[in-house]
Image 1 (cartoon, rainbow, N blue to C red):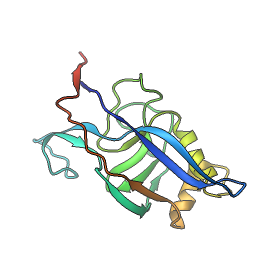
Image 2: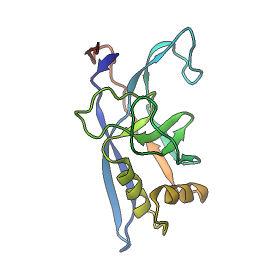
Image 3: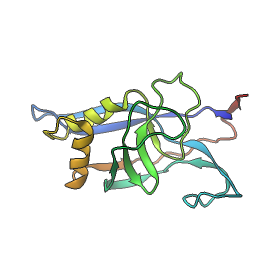
Image 4: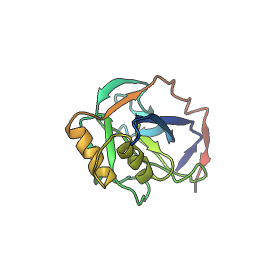
Length: 168
């Protein structure tokens, strides 16, 4: 298993609190990650075969059309579920608890660092939803077309330069 140094990005949640005041919350996240697209069995989501620096360079503001409440991370166990689709197979979902947790990976998803349930709760709290469950609130927002996502431009990191070693 290869290890890489990857940058940490910021995810912002903007909305209105119960007092009607505009609020912006900030969450750290992993955004670009090396991904092995096996040339013998290539993933059709990627044009490049072999090592891919997976992640969206940018995405104009758009309505979220899919929330997957039962989604679970595939490469590591996580007690949190749910994923917000940005585009195609690019999702926003749970990531490592903190920056010292190693061996997380992504195929271009945005992985929220910390407690993903709290991230979802921040979305629910700033949405005006009356739902008691954050996942239900997000589902409701998607259904009525009131949840939006935007990815600001960023140059992907150089995965060859950021190679840190291998785990046995």
